[in-house]
Amino acid sequence: MAETYRLYRQGLFSLALSITGCAQLAEDAVQTAFECLCRSEASPNGSVVSYVFAAVRNAATDVVRSNRRATKVRESIFNEAAHNKESLTTPVDGLLVRERDQLLRVAIDGLDDGDREVIVMKIYGELTFDEIGTVLGQPGKTVGTRYRRALSKLEEKLRGQL
Amino acid sequence: MTNLNTSESDIAPSNIELALKQLSLREPSKALDSKVAACFKEVRVEDLVGVPTAGWNRRSFGKAWKLVSLVAAVCLLLGVVVGRLSVPVGTVDHVAAMENGSASISAEDKPSRAGGGFGEAGSGQNPVINVNDIPEVVLREHFPAPAVAMFCALGTGANSGNSYDRCLACHQGLSDAKAEFRRLHSSMLNSEVCTTCHVSARDKPVNVFTDEVSIRPWQTSDSPTG
Image (cartoon, rainbow over all chains, first blue to last red):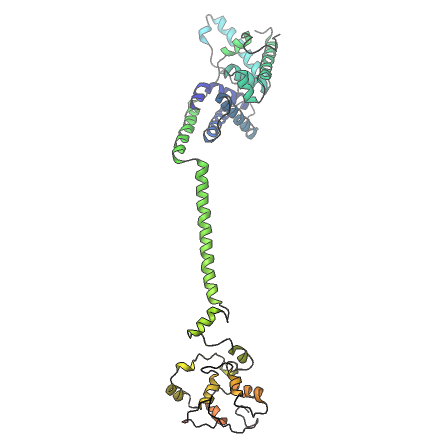
């Protein structure tokens, strides 16, 4: 369990943040999930990774329900201040990359909750479709279809802008 | 448009996927790492102590068991005290107590006293005397009346059953016999009064079971009680 957290801490936190819309609540959700996992005597039937992600997702959902009024302004899962400086060769490239990232963030944050969760778990959690399906309680193929449909939505939103 | 029916391994990462992967994500704080690590440490400690649920059950069971034991002990003590104070008359325990001399009223004496016996007539208290335990000298010193009067006054005897019935065995000539006899003897608890009717000499021992006892003829108006 500790090893799972060490390997997937970024994906788990991003998933919780995409659900709660608040960094502090996301950390609370992750902490609550691991407290429950540590105290629980039940062992996962399948993938431990899916089990942990499902626990974090449920905890984040509970946090949102109990703090519905507190989360008025959603925080992005992306770090707006950071830039991938390695890819920046010229100031113009920097401006283009910064503009592109901003467009992507807005597009991702504009997705509905289900699609955004799938995107986060797939890209930033690096889970397989079957593992995501286990988390969401859906078949892996269904998750794959949702993922690709979400990408299509993003492409449509960003068409002509990137 | 992307083919939605392709499998996970079939498709190459699209441009948008590559772009999304290049985005910088907000990272969890070190405090979260510490908190999660603390969760694992707690588990290790609890594993050594025992399962938390089992511990809670053990503690609650202990409290419940103490409470039940306390209530049971209190009930036991109450039962002993109440049982000791309320032994019904006529039970085995009561008969045993009579044999030990700790009680003086027999079950057979109860009805006669209730019907106007010695205890009801003026004294207001039950006699606690066992005649067999008192030496004859002491009896004569404290009870100068004839033995028959004394026995009648005490209402007890060595082998007495119903003392009234035994007295009536001798006093057959009385007109109103039993009722009047009871009334008079109930109100004459003073042994001096007994000599009014009973003429036996004080210094003459009388065996109430064998000797004939002469009784003065008396009138109702001449009776000591008026």
